[in-house]
Length: 283
Ligand SMILES: [Zn+2]
Image (cartoon, rainbow, N blue to C red; front, side):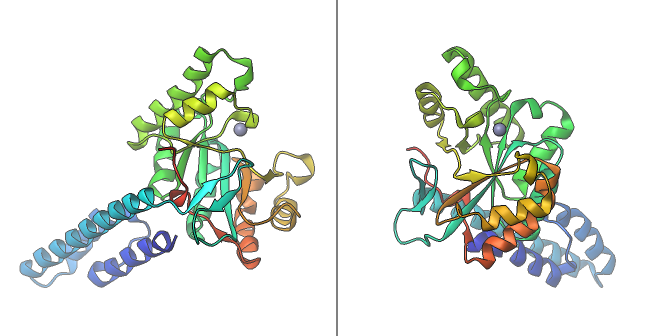
């Protein structure tokens, strides 16, 4: 989690020192090099600056990779039988996990940007039927590039209990293939539509290397909480909020608007937002 916060800050600082800070990581490299080319006083300096910048980028990439390996080797949390997030060892137990289902529809990118702004990690559970157009694929890539974990929520959001094993397999595997094609890696988590797993779907998801979870509470589909203020209030003040709470939200307009207040409200109550990368995967 610390690294999650630190990485963009360090990157940004380095970029400021060299040639002025770009607003996002993705836009950094090329535009900054153009800037430094214009402002450098000699060719030698340009070369040096560009080389330094490349070094910084390479270092950051290596660090990120090492960090990922380290975290995968030593998970700090696991998902309990009731889908709450519990420490394996001496990790902070006052944590909450943010999850967003039925993505990426119309508001996932806005949600991701709000979360990123607040340095709040989360999982986006995606449906394959939202990953067919170039624009949808690009949205998923952006969300992943911003550092968020991607979960599989099946292709068509069907109730797995109504499907044959063959159909269930298709619903799950197809999404893994789509996601891998778009972001270069398979989803890390699995959540069944309506929380309705079968023994078969649970086993298949685990065989595919995904951690299976439902959630501990959520409200954004209920009519009285389809309002950002009401939703932000209940998500933070419900009596269901406790250590390891696994918060279910969706790709909806009122949810997107409520995200900043939900993040602030949880932190004000002393909850750390758990980094999905620190959650144990099936071995
Ligand atoms: Zn869903």
